[in-house]
Length: 197
Image 1: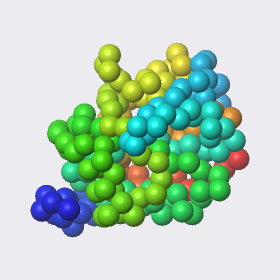
Image 2: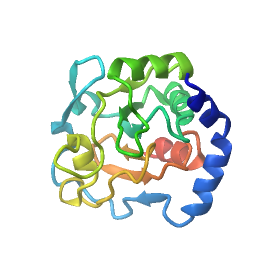
Image 3: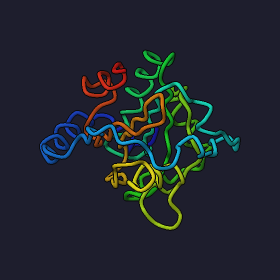
């Protein structure tokens, strides 16, 4: 862990508090009308950080939490909460971290360096994808393209606003929630969304 990463880990509580104060009205978006996707998320495959390719169809009948991540962010400590969440609900939940360098050069490492950092510092055992682009542009990862296009997912046009945005897909492949970075992985809002049918 670099000196910067150690400092960010120490100031994490202040980062969360600041995020909560700034984004009081725009933290959680919910699929209130039970919109059905116009294209199936299960048609999408992605590359893991070890080079293997996997289809989201492999996770049908489980909830999927997709998170864009970074190693040098004020929210990086959420890796720990994500791992605890995964351990608590892994019978019915898959978590996939998508490392990205889209916000302020906060993920400069290679896929191997990112995997080592996550394992050594936070004990991460949930899936990590190959480092990719999550913001809207021609290089946007296919999964994030689906997550941020209402013509595909049925209701949401929100790309990640920063690192550690969280998207929850239900067991039938419908996008149900979007959580802004200040919403912690073990928060009541996220755990209740996972427990809901």
